[in-house]
Each structure stands twice: as structure tokens, then as C-alpha cells.
Image 1 (tube, rainbow, N blue to C red):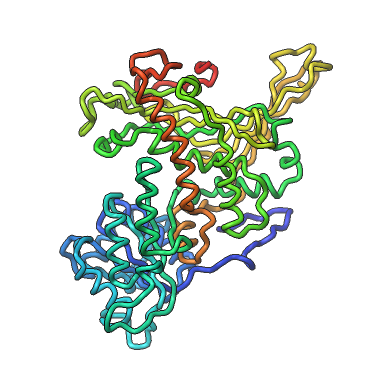
Image 2: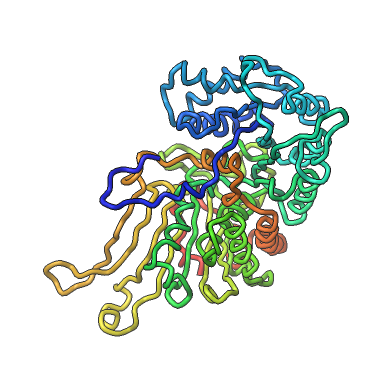
Length: 524
């Protein structure tokens, strides 16, 4: 990232950072939307930024009957549409695509994995690499497939001697002992509750060591999310007041203007709580409330996140219903005024479905720093605005001097950390109105766009980190377990509630697509 000229020097942390290593980068589900829209365009952007190792070999693994040339052409179309580097030259593409190959196989076919093992082990040559090209010994397996295939692929990799765990650490008969690492990147959804996530973890850990399993949450790759640690722990003006004595509440929100589109088959079995709250919102809460880690190494940071999840206060069903709201959008319009059909009318949504497209849940942490501070997590689809942000509301000044005279018109300080769009930070503070004996709130704003030429796409950062062995921004098994407990409790409370009941008793709110985002006060 290019840092624009400034009067201040900057401290580079690169000296202690891990670097992407040469590897086989194997994408399962390589002909799918995720590979074409995100994975290969991000790899290409990293290549153009000279971040990718020269000896990285990219291998697509999917059912479609393609050869290397057809697959490369398909990926070129995806990169032309979704890469940051528009209008790239034929030479740019040739230098990247010469290391892209394709293996046609069903994910259940052991023969495909046997051939994959042969390619990675050097037993089968890859056409066009040249005699002087030294094949990498490392391998990263990216599961860009449906969650029903995660366990099967991990087992097949282990059986083929391509894992790193108990079963995968050995070698197949006739193979030489291997060197190098093996890593597994797993997309969401990671289970649909604590039990299924735990069962999946057991399968993955049978074939890969936990340190080699990278559960991806693309929200953690966003530049403004990463900035949370820097903002909190690199500034003495924030950390001393980041506690219950000065903070009255937090609001963590992710809202979208789009509906579910064609995702009814998945979304109707998940809902907003499972789809967004369990991962994105809970992770943002952890980063916003965790204690300072002992160091910047991945495990120190993830240990502190787990401590936050362990401290989440538990409540019975009626109290959870009182603390939560759920809603479902009806027919309306999107942000551009285009018609949006009701969720209930979307393809593959069950008749009479009570699946929520909006959820709000207020949690509290039973720990010293944040005891008694309400933290509200909110997300919803088909609203009038699209944004992701963390709002930290500070307590009012004492009822003396200005507060005594101004009352409610003296607004408390507020810190907004905007994740997208308009990425940045702004602080609301009170100041004198020029020429008048009066006080008015003003905003002090910082925009990332003012100091950077571009913000790296989240998948760029996460792919580079996975190749480097930096697991800071990936989710550990115990993080997933404790996050699912929060959602499981909420889902259990909703399952016993009547969707037609009052909102504070678990009833389902109906809101027209394009509605304004509900205020927190409307939940009280």
C-alpha cells in the first residue's frame, strides 16, 4: 500500500512479519463463483504487487471437464472483472497464468487425490514450468466448496497422505517421506451450531493439526478491522478510558441494502444470527473489547479473544428474548428505488418461514473491564443504508458546569469506527460556538482514503497470511465453539417463542424492504 506524504514518520512492523512462502495453492471448487470473484483476482493482485512468491503453483480442482488453457481463460475473465489492476497487459497475465493448472475430479473420487499427491510430490510433471523450475514442497488447500464437502475433502486429503495431522502426517505406500507444511483454509459457514461445528473440527483435526487449519472470516481481513488493535493499543489517549468507568455502551452493526437474492436455499436454513452474528459481529466484539495481548504473535491475540467469549454473560430464555429482536423484510424497494420482493417470496424459501433477516442482541461481559456495559450486535438485510461500524458511546460529563445547564442537549462523546464504506474513524466532541456563549457537538474525522492510495481487498490479506503461516486473522476451534454457544442459546429461545408474539417476547417483526435502520431506543 502506498502511504501518501506526511509530516509524520511511520513505524514499519515488516521486520517481524512473516512472508508468503512458495507452495502449491490448491483451490477445491475452482470453477465456482468464489474462486472467480475473489480468490484468483486476489492472487493476481498480490502477483502484481510482487507479494506472491515466484515459485507459487496454483492448481484448480473441480468436476468440470476443462484443460489448463480453458481454466486459465476462465480465470482471466474473472480477474479482468474483479481485480484491482484493470487493463492489465498480456505480458502481466502470461507471467501469472503460466503457473495456473487444472485437475478435473469429483471431490469424492480417491483417484483425483492420488493424482494430486503425485503432482505435489513431483511424480507427475506440470507442462510449461520449465526444466529449471523447482517445485515447492509446501501445499495450501483452499476449500471454496459447500460446507457439506469440508469433512469429505479433509478425509480424502488425509488418506492420500496430504494432511498434517494424525492420519495425514504419514506417507502413502511407495511415496518418499515429504518435507514442507500442509495447511487447510476453510470458508464459512463453519457448522450451523456448536455440535455440528465440533463434529467438523474433529474430522479436520483427524487429518490436519489445529495450527494448520485456517478458518476464514473475510471481515477480519478488512483494513479498518485490523486497525482496531492499532487504534486501541498504540494510542495512550484511548486505552486508559476503554473500560466501564468511561464507556456507557457499544453498538456493533452490519447493515445491507440488498436482500438474499438467489441464496434462499442456504439462507432459510441459517438466518441472520447464524450467517452474520456468530462470526462477523462476534469477532468485531472480541477485537473491540479484548485485553492487551502479551505480544503481537497470533496465539497471544487469539487467546485474548477467547477470554472475551468465555466472559459473555449467560441468560435464561425469557431474558434472551427481552434482549433480542428478530425481523423479516417484506416487499419494498432497495436503495436505488428498485422493487424488492418479500423474503417469503424468494426462491427456495419455505412457505411460512420465520427465518430472520434482521437480528439485534444485547450482550454483557462478566469481566472487570466491561462489567455492566451493554454491547449490542445488530445486522440486517434490505435496509435503506449499507454500512458496517463500531460505535463506542462514552458516559456523559458530571451534572455540573455545562451539563447542569444543557441537560440532554449536551451530547456525550462518541467514537465511530467505520469499517465500510467511508472507512475511517471519527470522534464526536463538544466545543464552543464561535461568537456565542453556547456549546455544540462537532466531529473530528479521519479517513483512510486520505492517507492511502488504496485499501487492500480482504482476501488479499488473508491469502497472503495463510501462505505466511500467520493465523492472527483466522478463527481458532475454541473461538468457533464459544461463539456458537451464544447463537445456540438465542436460537433455542426463539424456537420456543411464538413468531406472532410481541417483539420483546420473541415475535417476528415485519419491515418493508428499504426501511430505515431501527434505532436502539425502539428496542427498549
